[in-house]
Length: 81
Image (tube, rainbow, N blue to C red):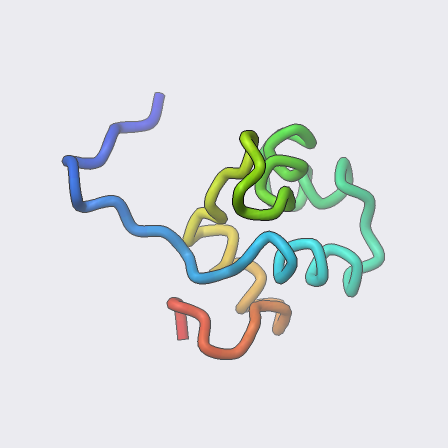
């Protein structure tokens, strides 16, 4: 079970849903394959790739951005730079 961060201390990545989807496509992966790589469910990947303003959007967790940065797929100006 994940520990919940204290209010106001949550840290989220600067990756947008479009950045995440672009990284997945550059890897040539399906959403399901990408989910396995990231250690999340395919549904979570779909929610992270949904543009802001949609009801199911979830921020991209920093660990996902860091993994993509290590693979050279995170956008310039990432919070993990």
